[in-house]
Length: 361
Image 1 (cartoon, rainbow, N blue to C red):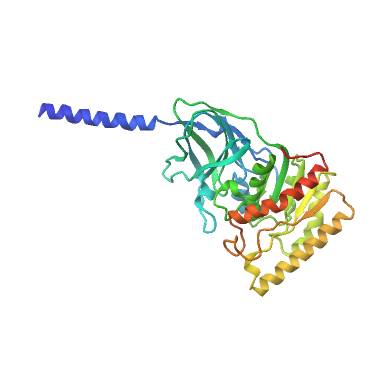
Image 2 (image 1 turned 60 degrees about the vertical axis):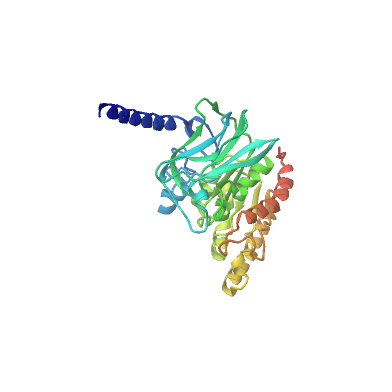
């Protein structure tokens, strides 16, 4: 009996040691020790997008939730680890019906190879606080990494996990020329499979521009609250998806004042307006088709009129599809649709910005 007791105690101790070793097998670094990119302007909360103390006029939904998400932000770092994990302390963990949970609450990792950002892995940390492995079994050597944060959840901190003996260090921002995007759920990335697939972030990786993506899902209606914030934002150029959310009436009433507020502090900065995309749900819905047609016609009219007196305003035309092959929910594009969108505006934006000495890498 005594021998059996010793044997049992030994087994228990071995099991405890194995558990401890498993827990010690990964070194986690808080995101605050790494470089954060993608913020349009400083905020009291590191992972919030807009300082809602400094700026007023927001609804409770915008102030308490939408402005607080880290959509468009990413960590950049170098590591020689052969695996990379992620864990998140959430303030508010969000899921959705028309966007994957990985995009809503998870992470999207890219690693540079031969000068290009390549998809490396993505995943969703457990709601029980367990880390997710984004990539493993990589070849040895230092890697330049880009880790996009969740689209719609609010986070307190993110932790990057690496091998216990690996090096991980903050890396400089790999992008240049600050281009601020502001717009609707399209700009936010709704219906994307991963957070890095929002069209502005695809453009970021494709061009090397330092994109700051402010997608305000359902809430980009040419409001003065956002115009004041944008006016205070340092930028080499602004790109607006400004006509997807507002009604034709709101466009007519608000567009001129929206531009005037930004122009007061950015008199010659290029303002590039995008026509709203053709939504698949209008193909057979006559009411939707009529409303969308009226809105697109008025948007064209308003921007063209502004262009007559302002040589630094532009209008471009994104394309996803018209047959619905890249539409997920009658409104939002899939990853393919966002890729098509990025490709359709890439050259027009490059052509415009080249006139200001702003060039891709």
